[in-house]
Image 1 (tube, rainbow, N blue to C red):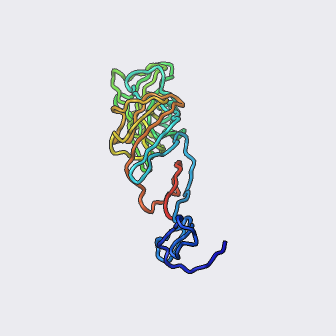
Image 2 (tube, rainbow, N blue to C red):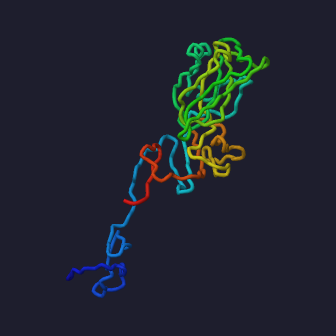
Image 3 (cartoon, rainbow, N blue to C red):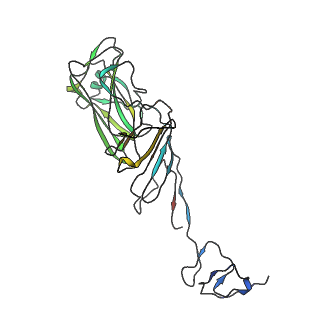
Amino acid sequence: MAYRLIEAYDHSGGMNTREAPYLLNSREFADCENVTLEEAGKVKTRKGHQNYKTLPAPTGLTEISDCDDETAGGTWTEYKDVVENESFPNADQAAPPDDHDVICAAATQTDIATALGVLTIAAQPTETSRMCFCVTNDSGGPLNLYEGTTTILVEGTYDGGNQHEEIEITSDVGNKEVANGKHRYIFGAKPFSTITSITQPDYATDAMAGNLKISVAPGSLLGLPFPIEATGDVIRVTVQGAAISLAGAVSVANQTVKVGDLVDNDDVSITFRSTGEVAEGTDLSGITGVSFVALGWI
């Protein structure tokens, strides 16, 4: 086939595949690929998209779906080291919650007072969740809680900001005694992604019996990683593949979902909508735990 070179400044005819090439005029193309003809007199490479950054998802986060400028959704699986929701601050329990000393290993009230109220953090939450304040008596005899309110202060982060909560056990003369081999515990309400400190700020005045042990665990009230505006934004929750009732399970104030009793390695899925969008010019290079593709000009 013979070719001829022509100078063409008007490309308004675009690509014409219906006519034989020798019948085309100077404003038409027999074939073109990945180009735009929007600017008069110029042929430009078509804008497209490329993979900006791919990051490994952490344990438990399997996908982010339904993402656009207005909404986001998420699904999680394999929640581990999560304890039951129900609190028992005033009634002895035969067993502590599962993994009751995951966040802070059990320490006696005497040891905590010696440390000026500071509890040692043993591990971070594997998933965003609320905290559980646990008390254990393994001294060999009955011991008393403080007659009044004992406070544990949890400080950390949630959704990129600071988070703190005071978790309290209040006892009176009728229920302060904890029998040997028994346990008491109470859950907080706020979710934590990371823990920076756990203290008993008033240890000098609200201390319980010296040989009672205090520990801290994560709870199965799970925190959402993206904000919601209404309870209806949580669409579906399943535990081990079975849907659970959402009645009373969603807290907009605390951005949490109550998923019921869990055991290690239970699969939990939460599907939800989240409002908001990433502001123009936001630096995404520091984001971890999410795989994404950025669409735009290259």
